[in-house]
Image 1 (cartoon, rainbow, N blue to C red):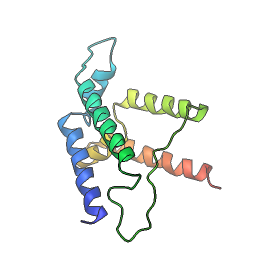
Image 2: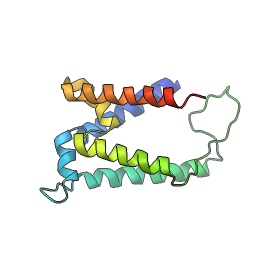
Image 3: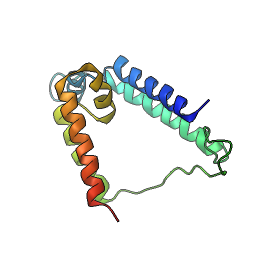
Image 4: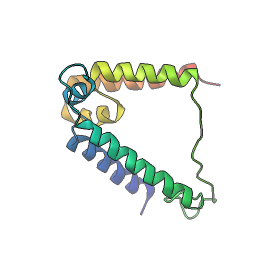
Length: 143
C-alpha cells in the first residue's frame, strides 16, 4: 500500500477521533479550559488516550531497530530517531502564544482543519490566520 493511502487512512482516523470526542467543538473545549467556572473534565480522557497511544508508539519505534515502519522498500535504509530537545525561550514563548490562541478560540490546528468541513466562518478565519502564521514564520526564518 502507498504511503499516501496510509496518510489518508490515519488522517481520516484522526479527524473522526476529533469529531467523536468533540475536540472539534470549540464550546466543549472552552468548557474544558474553564476550570474556575463550569468545568467539563471529559476531554481529560481524550488527552490520556492520546498520551497512551503516543507512549506505545514511541516504545515501538525504539524497539523497531530504528527503521521507519512505512519506509519505501527502494529507499535507502535510514534510522528513525526520536528528537531530544530541551526547553528554551522559543519553546516557552511559542507555547504561551499557542495556549492563548487555544484558550481564546477553543480551536487548535487539528480541529481547525476538521472544522473547515462544517462551513462555520470561525474555522475559516482560524485556518487562514494559522496558515498566515506559517507563511510569516517561513519568511522570517529563511536562511
